[in-house]
Length: 412
Image 1 (spheres, rainbow, N blue to C red):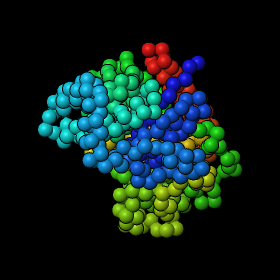
Image 2: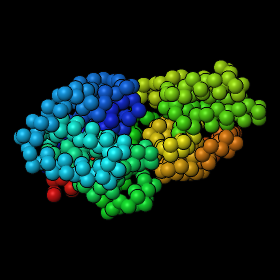
Image 3: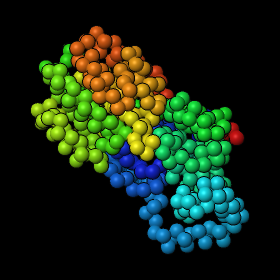
Image 4: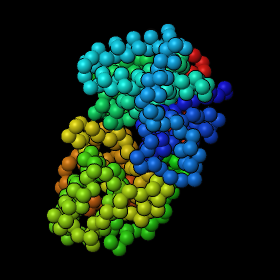
């Protein structure tokens, strides 16, 4: 099977909040692909590890290029490739009129077009045959224009925020891409409702390394049941609802220890909320951000993992959080919400428990059920491990993506 040289673009590589991107790159490299990594920004919170040092050193950061250099490169590219530049500029102007020529989105498209020239130059320099981009908003804009400038094809993986909060030109991106991937059937239906050609859209799950997260056999609950949360401390993750549920559990006289791992803009607010609810250090603690390499150990110390996702005030919500898969593989029973693509992973009372977003009473009842019903917990965890290994296996899903590259790029 003939291999191709790929470029990969994402908002931040390697970022602690997007482990699925660099893990996918590693899997494709194991399959024999040469991957040239590009990042829009330098990671604000970089992921660290032995394998990541080489990746981080090889990443080209687009927005790190100085503006006067970007303008100069646009002039030089135009002089060298005038027809490609003018045709892509024409596409940009058409896109700007579609989103409102004087809108902030239109100005953003123009800004990203300028940087797409930097990317196009690198694509031509490195000799890649195709560029794949994670997230359908800013990175997809840059990759799309760069692909047309450089004369190569592109494809997209869409996730959550890029669809639910920052969606523009989705139909155009779907039509222009060689293929358009998204992570859930929920997202595919969402794109259909946005007028996108679903014949171009393929569901490829984000997956996890099933060998990295192994179930550590537990003999019943801890003496004091340990409830865990891992996530960025932002509204859509629902950590405030988890604290509300913890308050309800205290009212019922249930003894527990809740550990919230993660950092973010709501960190101070959540700590203050815990104090206001009377959830003192003996039952609630904040662990801060933890390295991805430390997640297995954190999960193995838990009895219940809770991620009560919800829509935030801007309409953003999660897709299918990777951390749920990691918890399930670790043999920890999980609770989440009826939201987005989550029920495609956490099937209520089959692979975990689901509650309505924002419902603290339901959440408290679900936690209580997993603490008190050992038979239910055991069956859920067995089913959950099987579900993740079957449908959310990183290696299998990277192979599925590789087949798309073969079909749409090599065979084209």
